[in-house]
Length: 417
Image (tube, rainbow, N blue to C red; front, side, top):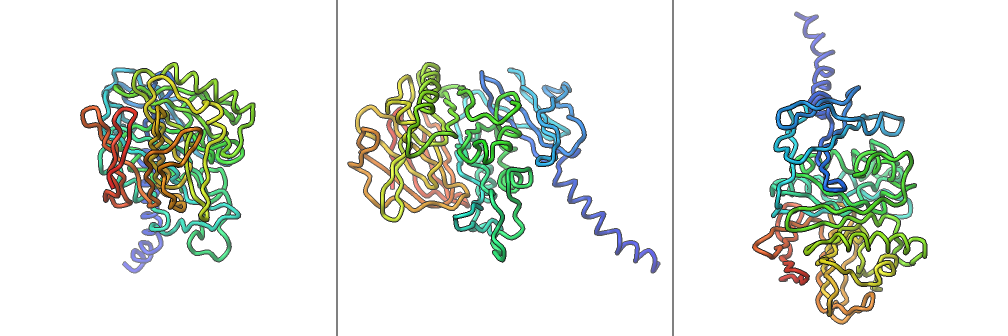
């Protein structure tokens, strides 16, 4: 009996650790699974797994082999598998794990942006170990509880670029660099419940540009077939969600305070392509705002010079809204004349920016005057629900409390403080 007790003492922790590891890895070695919108009307299912080979996915009860997207390497020692889900598919599952498929006319959207924990030399490190200082996991769980039909992430997933300073308990032990450990800590683990709650539309942020978090972006989230090398630009595409088109623009290379001719030419061409495909009712989804107003130490700043030059500050077609992130707060700007409203959701985890204290009415950006503007610098997300022809926008805090109510009616937007 004494020997049995000794064996239990020695091996029970190892057994329990094995159970925890298996649980964290999901079913049969699956770590993460999600469904995302792709180009040309496609829907993609992807998984991250510890398996040696890609599993079957069951589509309408029929097993189909998933394809390799990424083979394990030193920086990303996981297997990434994917498959295009055919139209008409009503059920999908991998190793018994059900996947959420698109609904024909989504009426409840969750929008998040700028979610990672900032560890960057030159900036005050964010306390990644403190769920109050970095609340992304709490935000993701809260957002999932609203049972959205679609999640839109407006970019900037990866923030753990540099090591936590020695002696800083707030971020001690954090991984850093463009590798799987950092991407898992910044995004996949905290977003787990929300990833499984609904299909996603992913925008690429400037933190996912080449030389920063580009490898992770193309390994996991870019909607295109794998490229051999990191791409500075990727093709624009349209996500058709029934009564609304999402015009997806990769603006990761855009410059806030300059308009280099080569960038302007490329983005002008891509913007024109999306305008032509907009249909009667579309939202422009891109990480960099076309027209964003921030305030730093009492001084206003206006962005984005590259996109303003590329668009000529005019968006044609059926575009009714520009949806972005990049500035770390909530902002809604409505303009005089025919310019579309600009909505910014950049407060879902990364340290929030200072609020704009200058009154918005009368401010000019890109040749148009703001007639109404709203700003909040609290952590949270946007819940958008379609009621008739009007999108009711509820800005929610970390725990789900409504902070501000707004609405988007065609190309008019306002809030009700």
